[in-house]
Length: 427
Image 1 (cartoon, rainbow, N blue to C red):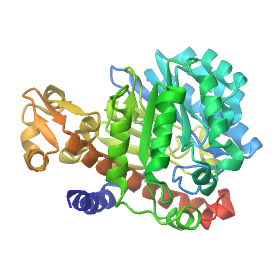
Image 2 (cartoon, rainbow, N blue to C red):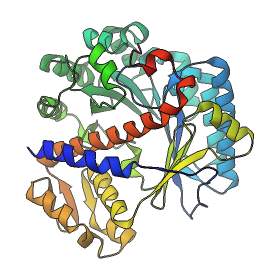
Image 3 (cartoon, one colour):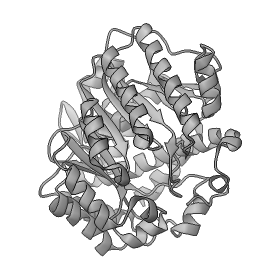
Image 4 (cartoon, rainbow, N blue to C red):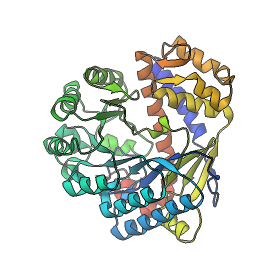
């Protein structure tokens, strides 16, 4: 019952919070005396999966070369303005789709900023010696591989089997990648329409025993307004009735050798995670369709790749929309993000918003305590076992809201998208 109420409530909140205002030619504010996380978005893929709502288009070599050139210029401008970064997260799309261009981006970043760790996403078919050697030399210490499942039937339904290989082939590639990076993360999906308990249990067993990955992240299947048709046609109708049961299977299966980094990420040791927004209170993003969050304001760059390149080439900023959050909205956002990382130090909230900060959120905190979601340990709040699934629901709905905003923005760039993608038929 609580899960259904959370879903209903959060969808209402998301519709309000994801209303961005047009903001052409508005640049990011000057940097403060600190280091940030840099997010780099690469929007190109060779295959467009029907469940994916991220900003991505099919790869066109010439456009991609121009995009990477513009991306490097945008990065140089951040350095000229005085920004510095300690961590970098590269997402997509498929960041390794043009490997040498990506390596140039990472070499540039390392030459300009005080970067200590770099995380990059990839797909199983790119797990070859050339790719791994090149990005390792470029400073990558965390590699996150989009697997989703080892079940061949599910891979076929998701349109991934022909391009990325069978479950057995993916296992072999992951075994070859093991030990080459500080952290090898496996991105998985649960609650897929035709997924069975035994299929999910087999996935967990492969990850923990056959491969022994350093980290595994299990995302609940998320839909957006535009992916519903493609998902129902290719994969079946999504339902949330089995989601909690599947989540409990994952928790039990990962319990012995892994500790939780977040409510849906399991790690053998401390490591960077996919949800950098949990650990970073502010971050800067470059690339088309990327989000920055600074001083309570979210900035969105243009979702048109053509316009992005034109903006950078004409010495303009690529930001086209922003959303300013009020103090209470910022505090609720921080409460959700920080607790997704399992615990919230009260002193952190006091430092950010003053000693009265938690009194402002008394309704939210009281409701969470009454629901058994959090426990007060004096100096900090801790998620309970029950609360961890509630937070999976909350973050699922948060990302669905973000995905719906992405689709809203992408509706204006039909000429840059694949026809099958627009009509929900992407393979």
